[in-house]
Length: 72
Image (cartoon, rainbow, N blue to C red):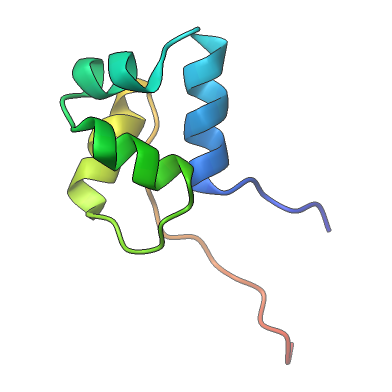
């Protein structure tokens, strides 16, 4: 099964596709630079509302998806 990219990887990839710096993305998405850096570095505890704010800039959002469990 193909591994899905992490949210941090998606944000970094989309930012680079648009040739934005972390500072530019933070300003355009309305969040702080530290938040962008934390997300791109894979920080596990971030505010969901702010994460969606950044993702919305790219036309995306966080959603719940089913997971395959190891015991299945």
